[in-house]
Structures are given as C-alpha cells and as structure tokens.
Length: 87
Image (tube, rainbow, N blue to C red; front, top):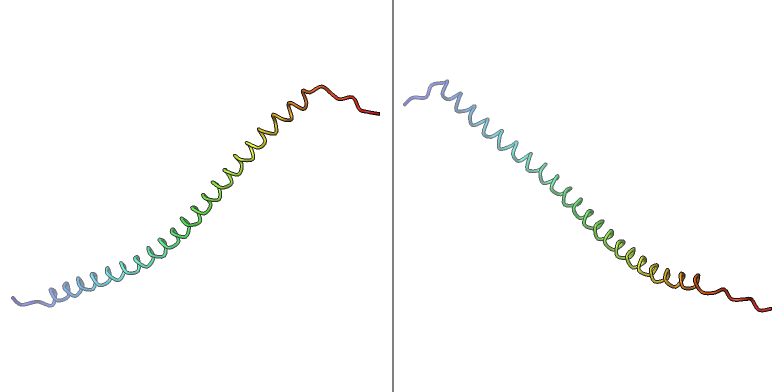
C-alpha cells in the first residue's frame, strides 16, 4: 500500500497534534502542582487558625466559669446586712 502525499501530510499533522497535546498536559501539570501547593499552604493556615480558635474558646470557657464563681460571692456580699462603721 503506497502512501500519498495527502496521507503523509495527515499523518504528520496527527503526530504534531499529539505532541502539542502532550506538551500542553505538561504545562497544566505544572499549573496544577502550583495550585495544589498553594492549597496545601492555605490548609495549613486554616488548621492553625482552627487550633488558635479552639484554644481561645477554651480560655473563654474557663474565664466564664471563674466569673460564675465570683458572681455567687458578689451576690452574697450584696445581700449581707450592711455593717455600721466604727468611729
């Protein structure tokens, strides 16, 4: 079977298209790698912020518990009869 110039041209064009497609994939791979790297950095930041928020929440809960304890004492002192000053 003989190849005509048209067959050779079509085959060459096909090979060129495949080569270009593979080259474009490599470019997208680089872009995806960069995007994935940025997403990993953001994920690390978000995890750090979540840990900080959790620690702040625990501190706030402890502070609220201390305030609740103090509130009971303040109410008892306010309800106690007033002392007459000496002098």
